[in-house]
Image 1 (cartoon, one colour):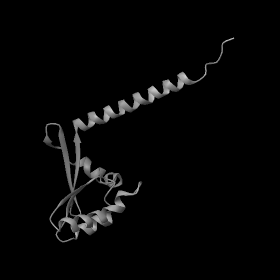
Image 2 (tube, helix red, strand yellow):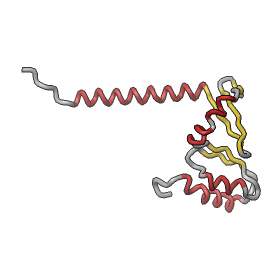
Image 3 (cartoon, helix red, strand yellow):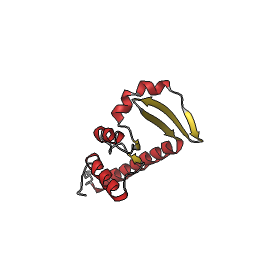
Length: 133
């Protein structure tokens, strides 16, 4: 692949390539938020055999469903993982929260902040000091 290729523009070609290599089968596809374009997912829904997929929902769609999410109860699926389930238009949407993920995100932010402070101090050391006369 050439660099800077958008995932959503290559998904259809990849799916065709996989089906030609391994044949048509009932598969479950896992995709992150940036990959599936709605047009490709619509095509996959009508394919033979039917395709099942787990795809990250675009943030704009999540914002549209925000009020619906607020009204739903959290269901515990593991000690540290809870989910909310919402059905809409024949699709099942899953909102998940994880204590481990929250801790990981905080650690990533702390690490980024530490890196920025380190660079800022390095920049400060490299700046010429005004002479005191």
